[in-house]
Amino acid sequence: MAPDSRLSASPAKSGWRAWDASERRVQGCAMPVPSTLLLLFTYLTYLVLGTCVFWVLESPAAHDSSKRFQSDKWALLRNFTCLDGQALDSLIRGIIEAYKNGDIVLGNTTSMGRWEFVGSFFFSVSTITTIGYGNLSPRTMAARLFCIFFALVGIPLNLVVLNRLGHCMQQAVHRCARRLGGAWKDPAKARWLAGSSALLSGLLLFLLLPPLLFNHMEGWTYVEGFYFSFVTLSTVGFGDYVIGMNPSRNYPLWYQNTVSLWILFGMAWLALIIKLILSLLEAPRESYSCYPQSSKGNFKPRSWSQGLDEEAGPHSPQPSCSPEGQHPEPSTQVSCCGKDS
Image (cartoon, rainbow, N blue to C red; front, side, top):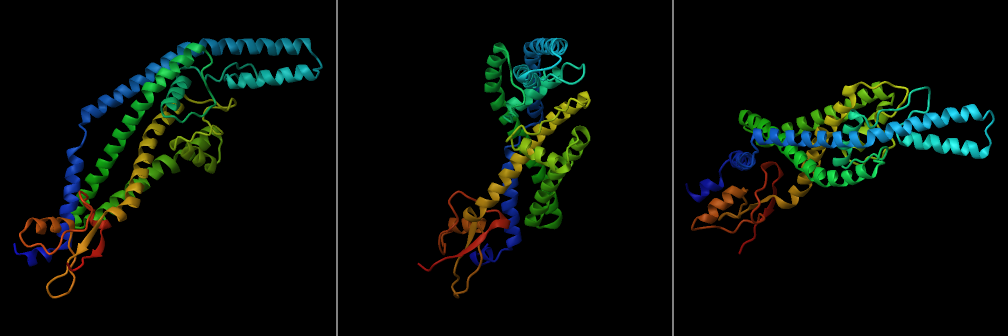
């Protein structure tokens, strides 16, 4: 093909070649499904292991604390009909300590079940995801030492799982964009639509719908539930709102387990969104094409792939001004002008 015909090639066709090459790179590093399932199985097995250890180590201490508090509470009510200042301070300190340990100070119920299996599982999830609400912590020395080693292995494992899940989500977006681009012959528009769909569906599933569940289960307002959702998925974890903390409500067994899975996939989605935002912020500075000057003095656009083809030929008007080793996306190319040598 002559140089002039290469220079006048269709921008849509060259843009599609760039998108196709990008897609092949993504598919080339695609993770096989069995390895992903094996990683998820290892992740869940590790969580169950930590759950069982925390349950065994902390549950007896929690039950002993509950019995001690109830005994002291009824002894105080029997022996004192009118409390003085010191006795009242002692009662308040005991109530605060009992609440930290997960004990209920109202009625005859003795424990909120924080260190039962479900509560231990939620604590394990909040530990390796580094959310750390601060509402619950190990009290026995054995559990504290185990928590150190559990977090040392669990936090890197959690990062690997989040990266794998985010990669799978990204692959799904790429596949959807490729199919739409093949049908419309417009990869830029297909990418925009696929990315927007991923963003909106994630917003709906991980940020907009969960507050309705928290409103029903916890009695929070929608804004409070939305606030808790974002603080949790971003791993800020202030601890001012934590699920399963209202002693007047009965929580089903599936509730905390479902929230744990929501945290895992929601963190992967939010990490993917942050990655896409960073790529969009960096793309204008790294991706652009050149306008080589023709023999007649007018300027014609040239894509990166066309520039490489022409550089390989014997007669090249000028070298490309795109960054070395970087291939701009079709939708983010910014033009610049070449200069006469």
